[in-house]
Amino acid sequence: MQITFDAELVPWDSNPKMILVALPTDDSDAIDDVISHVGGFGSVKVKVQLGGTSWSTSLFPSKELETYIMPVKQAVRKAEGLEIGDTASITIEVVNI
Image (cartoon, rainbow, N blue to C red; front, top):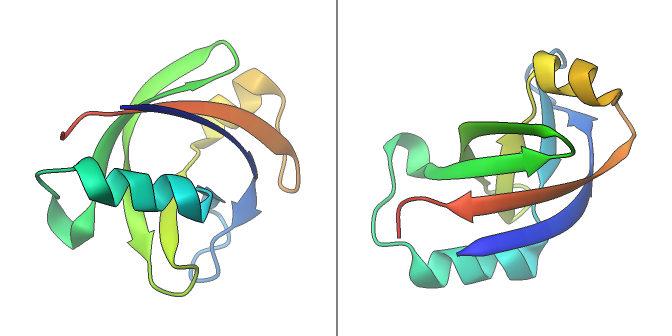
């Protein structure tokens, strides 16, 4: 399953040094409908493409936002010239289907 979405980069409330994006709730619901395995903390493994940068990471469920959130590491933000508050176009491929 592959999903492309636009999301704003925001700091995580618990640790402002960690920068996250939140998936649109419709996409989050679609992921829930097809995954067969979740990891620790309800994580879902994904491959990510953001601009010219690709990497593997996990989505994590956010009860507060009622969707999945995904960390965007500093190396990716730097390579793509992104800062907090910027909106990025992101493509994810769910690995644990």
